[in-house]
Image 1 (cartoon, rainbow, N blue to C red):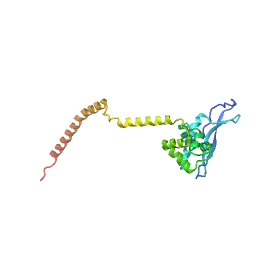
Image 2 (cartoon, one colour):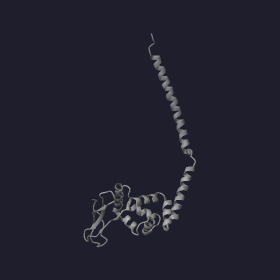
Image 3 (cartoon, rainbow, N blue to C red):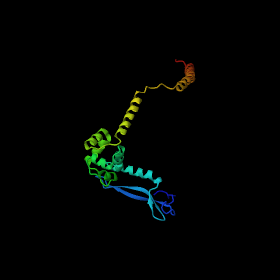
Length: 212
């Protein structure tokens, strides 16, 4: 449980919002249910419940963490983001993938889940936009943001190409100057060390007893 939330109730303007937790259960196929805890707040005077802005990031993190239990299946948020990316309505997306008119509404709220073949098809369309366009053309569905997404892809390709063609740059002049300076400073030091080592060896030879 989080610390008490010092926020006034916007409904009754008398009480203060106290932290509570709500349990949410999702039931993707092949699981016994995935339960997550979501943060919320309740007014200690009128009982009004809401989710505060300070709790939203943590709730999103907890919702995203349930992905580990879904295997092949997609989160409702993933399906929602994919549909919105291309400007499709829920009805248009349902028609495009050959499903009933409210199918995507149920997929996104996770009241039901697409079957395995539909899930694989949606995943393939996510990875390969050309497949999405082909399905749309076959279904007579317009993709409102198709040109915008194509422009985004062309821009990414141009940036990638420009980066790959960029010549390797030499060391900046200040860096070269620094290395030259260090070489000048350490060169005599290395020579002095070598001289000292040679002198030490000569002294040892002179002090050693002559062989009999």
